[in-house]
Every structure is written in structure tokens, then in C-alpha cells.
Amino acid sequence: MGTGYVLPTLITSPTENILKGIESTRNYILKNPNSGVLGMHLEGPFLNPIKRGAHLAEYVRKPTNAELEEIIKYGKGIIKIMTIAPEQFTDEQLEMLLESGIVISAGHSNATNKQASHAFRKGIRLITHLFNAMSQMGHREVGLVGTIFDNDEVYAPIILDGFHCDYAAARIAHKAKKDKLFLISDALFVGDKVKQFQWGEFDAYLQDGQYRNSEGNLAGAAISMGDAVRNATKFVDISLQEAVEMATIRPAKAIGMDDKAGKIAVGYPARFTVFDEGLENFETLVF
Image 1: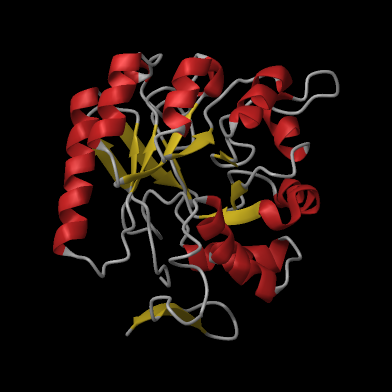
Image 2 (image 1 turned 135 degrees about the vertical axis):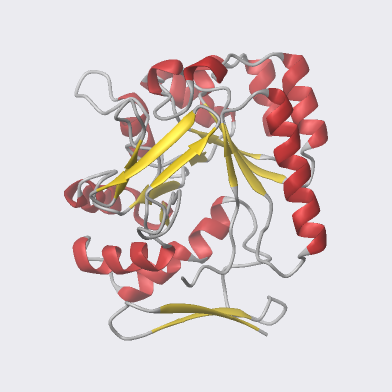
């Protein structure tokens, strides 16, 4: 569906599963060096239980120095992004992660403006899926959403499937974040081929184009990156040129990999996405 690069995401899990996920990703990359898999995104387990979304409550936990050290050591070179609720961390633990080389993203968080501002001052420059699973903006307490809008240095990915946020909210975000807004699919599966999914105690059911779990929480999207680009142009009044940038160079910059992907230039991989005029059909070409 036109996606040239991907970071497989492992959600909140026991430590044993996290280490297995790291190893599986490492082995896959070694065996398939041209697959486009750049590493992995570890989403959890150190989230705020109030904003856990579809993540299983029994595995959401506060970090310990020992577990953080183990994940950092074992995930070196493989974990590219780690989503955390920064208000659950001590300064020492935040610094440990930020110094590890992993891109730290604030998400599944109930942070106040004060807490979020502190995390951004510490060096966090990315958040996980704008509007979703985070403290919302009010006029007295602006929460994580308002703090993101108030900080020009923070990159904000958004899920444009029409369910995770209203397109009007996306238009507001576009005006506020400008070149720091980019697209993600957050897809559990693309399209409607998989109607039901069970992984351990995690479940998801496709209904009306959206995945939800048995608790009724959104459990991932069903759109491709091509769909996200089309929706950006169709519903958010974004030009095709900018929509393409939101799917290529901006996410590459957000994770510090814009020297390896995201543009057509000498020294970059010959990996291209082509599409038709109606933005209905996308294909990736690799030379």
C-alpha cells in the first residue's frame, strides 16, 4: 500500500515478551536487510493507566531503573521509538532514556501542562498520536494536547481515519503545528480482511471501519499511509505536496533518521512510492 519503511510496534507487555519482540525484530532485519523495517517502536509498558486505551491494565506499570536498563541494553540499535507517560518517571529515569539514543515519545499520558512542559524541557520532542490517549486541552488546564500546541519544537503524528479524531480537530492541529505535524496509520491491519484479532488477552474487532476491543476502546486503525495522505488532501485541506512530506521527510526528521530516508537525493536508498492521480492506488518501488 505504498509504505516504504515501517517500525513494527509492540504494545504493553511483560518484560519477557518485550525482550522476545526486540530479538524477533533484530533477527528479521538481519535476514531481510532490504525489507524497509528500520527497527521497532515500543509503545508501553510505562504508561498512565488512566490513559491506557486498549493496552492491558495488568501489564501497565511504573518503571524501575533495573527494567529500564535491561530494555535499553537489549534493545540497542533496534528500539527506535519508545512511548512513555513522562509523569510516571523520575528525572533520573527520563535522563536515562534520553541518553540511551532511543527517541522518547510522550503518549498514553495524563500529564498536566506543568508535567508535560518539564518533559519537553528535558528533551522529549515527539508525542504518540495527537489527541488520542492523552490529557485534553481545557482553558484552565491545557493538558498534554495544549502543551503540544504551545511548543514549536515537538513533533506530532496524527491518525487521519476519521475515527481517532474529527477532521476539524486535524485542521486545527495543522494550523497550530505547521511543519511539525505528520501522518501515521496506527494500523492494526489494513482494510477489512481481518475482522477479529486475539493476541493473548488483547482483542480487537473491526466494526464500521474501526478496530475496538471488548471494552469499547479504539484498538488501532485500519488505514494505510496512502489512505492517510488521501484523507489529508480531501478532508484537512492540505496540499498534495505537503501531505507527501507529512508521510516522508517529517516522520524521518521526528525520529532522527532523515539522513537515511524521507527524500530523493544522492546517497539515499532508491525506494519510491508511486500513486495515481486520484490517490487510490499506491505502490512501493525498490531498486
